[in-house]
Image (cartoon, rainbow over all chains, first blue to last red; front, side, top):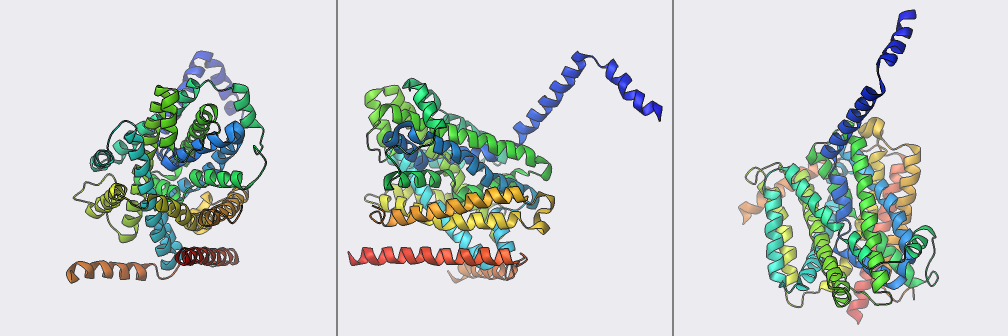
Length: 436
Length: 58
């Protein structure tokens, strides 16, 4: 009985502070190296969430309300994290994408509904990404057709090289470029105390009215989107993440949500400082306005807008192709060569090129498309979120990784608020005079 | 044309058969959630139809 008690004490005395620090360093270094290997889907999906439409929304919010709504963007970060974290667990445990999980669990009616709605929303959103990218490049006098062709070629090379790992690392580089707004905000020398006041003290500049309500809903709509749920779960599966990777996947998603909030806040700071009171209809218009004030700042914003559209496009087009592959039983991994997965890559290019061509059609109803994106995305969002929570509560499917009571309270509250606000947003987008 | 579409439709039939029965246990909570979702979608489709009619009338 005595020996086992004494042995650890002897061992403890024999290990000095230097070896102990060394082992602690080794443990941290090992953790970091595993994290770097697992990290990717969470950061990519969260940063890609700040797509062309998102950047426009943040720029317009800053120009309209100054720093007054920074606190709201800060709150949206954890909400996006809680939704996306569930997809990590679901993907890692079931090894299935979201579309397949819905088909299998809820049957063909809800399955076809989700797949059709996802593809339609993705395609329309893809068109808006091309609108953003061509507008950003037109600032540098690059014609839209050249932008569409160049983007399609780069995106084609990214997926056809035949390795998920390479695709992910290239996407992460584009995520890094998205942080370009941070130095941009420092260039305009904002008032730090005013920024902190806007971030820490909740309030509604000018009072709570229809205009501010519309902007709040637009910010929610750009922060949590249906394609994100489908994309991250499929990416987790394609990457081959396992139950043991879930903690790292959660950290990955958390880091991504912090990045998305940072970018959103810094875009808002730029326009709130320099373009306060100017009506912003698109991020390209904001870039052009900034060109007149500071050439370098306008250039940074235009590059950021192009990057945002590009990131959105690479994720959204893949979300649909993964979903098709899961349901139709095609090979659907980025690790497959084109000859092994022709339908997967074929659907990817059909979506991509058709969306690009629409932007090039003279007189295409681009404003109508942007409006429809908002409305149709709203029809899928509640369905995707409700299915997500029901799947996460399926004990047979999730085992010990099912939602706890606390997780359910948080996620159900988020879903109820999002569904209520996004419905009002859709109604106000369709009938703009209804709330005035 | 017929030869091209036939295997596609047979694939859809195959998917419909494969997923004809939902695997989820239809507890009270699941039933309520799916019912609310149907109501929500009917409401939204109604709003879209209303918008379409108002656009046509203009």
